[in-house]
Amino acid sequence: MSRRVRVPAADELFRPTVVPDEAAPDTEQSRDAAPAMDTGGTKPGRRRTPSGRVRHDEKMTVYVTADELLDLEHARLMLRRGQGLAVDRGRLVREAVAIALADYEANGEDSVLVQRLMQT
Image 1: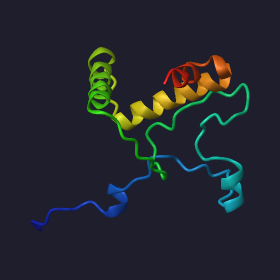
Image 2 (image 1 turned 45 degrees about the horizontal axis):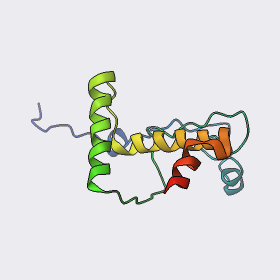
Image 3 (image 1 turned 180 degrees about the horizontal axis):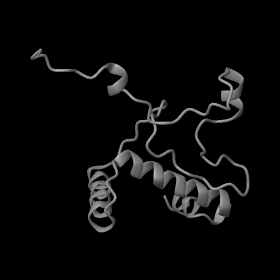
């Protein structure tokens, strides 16, 4: 009997976080024509949904004040304490962006986003 410890292989450690859609062809044109994630687009009647827990290929840096960061962290901790939702700051921000954009698409100039941007 060997005393060696079995180490997991790379394919066991690095598993995909999204089940690939077998029906969709893997061509550059199909990726441009139909986004992989349902972000709602601008089509009326579709519900805008955040991407959730998937691998994100795009990155955007946003600078916030110390108070804004503390407020974001406080909201994250309150969601964990009150609703039992363990989410990271990135997911919290993606959810907030999805909500703001859905409101803008539905209400246009009367949306909260437009009203707040006009105040500043």
